[in-house]
Image (cartoon, rainbow, N blue to C red; front, top):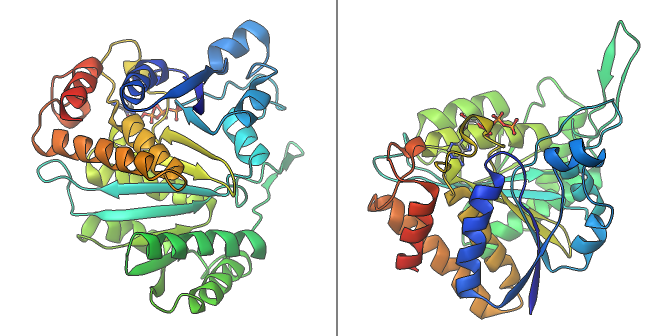
Length: 333
Ligand code: ATP
């Protein structure tokens, strides 16, 4: 039986993750292992996550996660997200974006493949009261790995082009290394076109032009920001899911944050988390084609629900609740 570690998260996390679990329960045989973590747990115990949390995740096949707030009390607090990424070396953050007519401002079917473990998120910062410095680490090895991942995905999904996003005109050395490595990897994948774009121009193009990109591969920070731009283009942060993938483990979550402004009101859009669960089934499906099929079934139900406007939450201009959306999905799956 598949073992799924679950961190419900903060803010709207528990509301949406519960809905997702009910959908998964109707589709697959799985054991859900709940892990105590997040803001409330931290204020109660002084710990960001229960002590056995990492061990419980290691004993599971995958991790399903809601958004987690990072409460800062003292400067030594390491975010749970960063800890999990490092512990399991989840080097690729993969975020597919698909547009919907009447909801999205542009036509789009793009995947952002973001390096997830280094760049400006190295965690190396120092300050002496006058000056603060953050180290932005780019390594050849990680640039190679993320580029390989992007081209592999292009081949698997029969996509045509991978575009490297950078700012080499300013960050000549670090983004220079990223870009050189990208083109070295591209040579091994001659059937896929490879090009590159400067991050600011890419942001503009994403908003301004239909189908501007196919697969985008980026260092950490650019991918983080571009994902929110792409989410805005397709219509809502609540519509996007992500996979954080390593060589032997992966974690799945919606891309939005804790959305404290709407937490507890039952109106959060659960579709980002549902899409994350479909990515999870697809990832598990590399070893089990039945799961892959179920992942696609969930994704088709989400697309159908949105295209036919069966139940839309307020962020998409509707008046449905989180539960209405989950119930509508049950009928479509
Ligand atoms: P965090 O600090 O946790 O990243 P944030 O408030 O900066 O949180 P989000 O939580 O992503 O960022 O929220 C940004 C905006 O998008 C908020 O107005 C929020 O209500 C909205 N939003 C985010 N997720 C959803 C969702 N699932 N459904 C509806 N609206 C959402």
